[in-house]
Image (cartoon, rainbow, N blue to C red; front, top):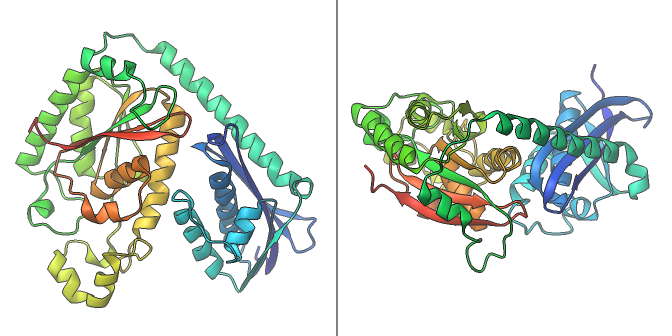
Length: 377
């Protein structure tokens, strides 16, 4: 059923700020009585503001699904209301892609207004957000039960020694981090030809399979790795399967680790893409909010990769994980760990089958221990 006019109330919360976080959103008919949709989700470790933005996005997406043209957004977050109204700037790196996503959704409606309301008037969305955070407790209980069933193994002394160290100097982070061993997939024909390779699915070359085997051997020597996570694309999955077999560790495919969708530039060389769309290609190289034609932007990649990061920190606290992915998702995870802007995406080089290591702490801190190691190849 199509609803021309709706009211969105959204909220988000974090038990720790940053801490276990969730959001809630409710969409009402114009009479503010009939509930048309509810959304809630546990989002892992995040801040209140990030959770609030996620709630707003969920409410806007639900409104779009209902076919709404006029949307009145009511939230008790002064920050989100003022930023989305254009009166305050979005400065925090974690919120920039979320605000951009919300603005793109807003642009799809005929009219959207934002109103601040007291928390007492936002009780429905607040309840949904708290239920979402309660879901996080259940996820943690499942994870704990799963860990209790695992056989114990002697950890590699190298990994054990690193795990026992305090957080790197000057970070101020506390607790044991979730350590992501970020492995880029092995060689394909498109990487040999230096062509845009996003959602296409070229197989590993013979050298690519050898690179995967060498990386797996290196990881197996480290030990104390709880799981292997992989992009769904075959070049990453084949690399990940080699690592999982060598480690005797479970392999899980996560769609959020997929490479950037390069759209119409898929399979083109840098020069060919620049010749095809000279003005757009030039701007795209410096503006992460611009998507390739028919594809996605780096800001959109950051949003989904950050969601993966939150899930991994929530589901595997204090664990060592192998994450097999592609250039842009790995660079994005390093960018998130360093807390730097998008310029890193354009300046950092990652070799095929290279290893980088990023750590994310339960208190929201992060660090980078290694970038682009290929010594084992």
